[in-house]
Length: 364
Image (cartoon, rainbow, N blue to C red; front, side):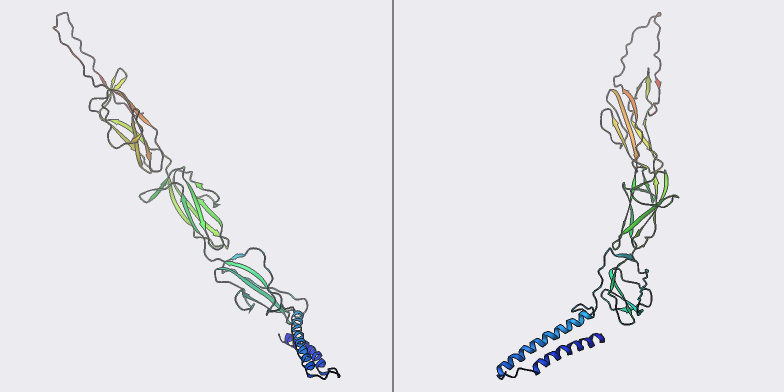
């Protein structure tokens, strides 16, 4: 700065000296005051222009831009560097002539400070670091810029099943067909990767919805890492996979009667439907009689129309597994028998009818 002032004074003195010489040596034949005044005003204007020109010359000699206190920073290209507040930077410089005197740096809106220890940025967000070196004769490097995004916050990660889990006594159940999506979010630098592991398997990078293949309890562990290196706390969940179908049966209140291979129901008979699931439990039982549509089973079924009939039933557990369909076929006889009586003779032999066979028909 002192060198600049000295050079400016020197150049200005030279220009002013030229102007003074012009003023001191007016032409001898000019005697009118009006002409002298006009010449003086013209000379003053020229002097001001010469002084402005001198200042510009000094600034050009010193390598400064007009109106700037220091060289403009170098233009920075490329994306911001993602870091955390733990990231440290060091400065290095070299000078082939008078050697390096010191290095300095500053945040974009801060003041320059001497580099004496590793540089760390505490505040989260995107900022610019300006840095430069100065040699021992006062030459200052054009400032360079490093753009950084400071992110100290780990990503938020969650696991979402495609089908809602069924919770029984605090334990979540799911079908084998269910899939699980892991999502992660990071507001500053973005998510670099999502990782997961199932049971004792090695950790994998998540790329698509995952499935659980093993029946029974399964442990899923998952986490995410952002582009600054922050990792979320590992989360985990135990999901019980229920891949076993429920069982169902149709039970008449009275055993069916087998007459020559055809099954009949007794008068006043009703049919109960029972289902069982030892994993997630029964969600619903569906039944249909003859040509009806399947409908929820709510009470014992009574069939009171004469003719042949079929009852079908199935059960669905709480994770969607469906049982095999079972059915029972039978006939309803509402016509009472007809009998006659006649006088018996000695030759007439009374023959008693054969007793009917009572059979319990198992569910198919």
